[in-house]
Structure formats: C-alpha cells, structure tokens
Image 1 (spheres, helix red, strand yellow):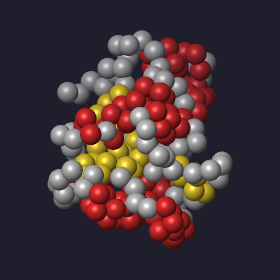
Image 2 (image 1 turned 90 degrees about the vertical axis):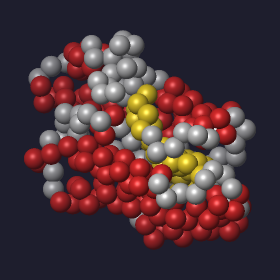
Image 3 (image 1 turned 135 degrees about the horizontal axis):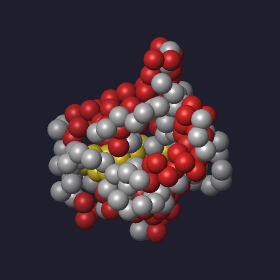
Length: 236
C-alpha cells in the first residue's frame, strides 16, 4: 500500500516496489486506474471502510508506505488551529488508522514494513514550514514509539527527503521567492549551496531507498529516521 502514490516521491516508491516484484495498491484522492483506492486521508471513516474492503476482497498487506502531501507553507505565527488539526488528521491520525488496520495481516504473515515519508525538518526545522515542521516531528515520535512495540519481523522507519524535485518543492520555492523578493532561481541557488551533492534529489532516489527499507535486506533496520538529502542535514 503506497499512500499518495500517483505523483512525486509516492509514485517513485510505487515504481521502485513494482520493479522489485511487489504487488502495489496506490491510495490517492482520485482513482487513476487499476489497483488504486480513491480516498481523502483526512476522511478517517472513509479511509477505514476503504481499507477494510480492500483487505477483505484481496488479502492482507505486508508493506505500508505512509506518504501524504505536506501542509501549506507559511510562518507558524500565521497558522490557525484548523491548519494544525487538518494536518494532524491527514498525517498522524491517518497513519495510525492504516497501521491498526494493516498490522493484523502483517502479524499473520510474520513480515511487515511500515515506512513513513516525512522530512529532514524532524532534525532541523525548515523556515517557512511552521505547521509542517510541527506535524512531521509528531510523526517521527509516533513512529519511534511504534518501533518499540511492534513484534519481531515487523519494522517501522522514516525516510527524510531533502530538497527533492517535486511539485511540493516548487510551491515552496515560489512562496519563498515572493516572501523574500528574489527570483526562484536565487532561492534554488541558496538551497543548493547547503547541499554537498550540489543538486536537487530525484524522486526515484527516494523510491529506491524506500524499496530497500521495505525489503528483507533491511530486516535489522528499525526505528530510524534516515535523511536522503545529498548530505544537507547538519546533525549526525
């Protein structure tokens, strides 16, 4: 199950998993073809009904990729209570719901992988992403708590994308350009000055890391937050 699997990092993860031989079901807001479940992750009741139906009709999942579009950019001082509630529902509550629904099948199979696509902001908050910084941090703590409770052979880990060439990054670039009164090219140049690899990441590079964490090869990797950011994150 790949959430948000129709574009960006989610689509790259779905592709990488398929390349490794996995049967992939994508969860997205709109159905885009076979093996796609249409559901808004903020609608917890519909999410629950949809996943229960999928499991009943087609069997359990062994892999869950929690991935959803981040909250709108903006300063935290301007964020409303509704902004936080909406983001918390889409990310933390939806992920909690999915794990509780899918975990029994993982336990029956004696194999499970939960991988959360969050952000390097869990290590270093990103300017202009106040709500996102808060919610991503909550996701990281939620995941670490689960890592201590899940049974053997069922792991949970976080992937922390850096500056990755997605629509989301383009929106942030535009916002910062307008806020600072500089061109989008200058915004990107400033970003890249902090990335030792000297470029934006490609979604496929994130997809490959996700596929590794989902595989038997990552059986002893548990409860980690792994930056995939070209070396930008300054913390160890």
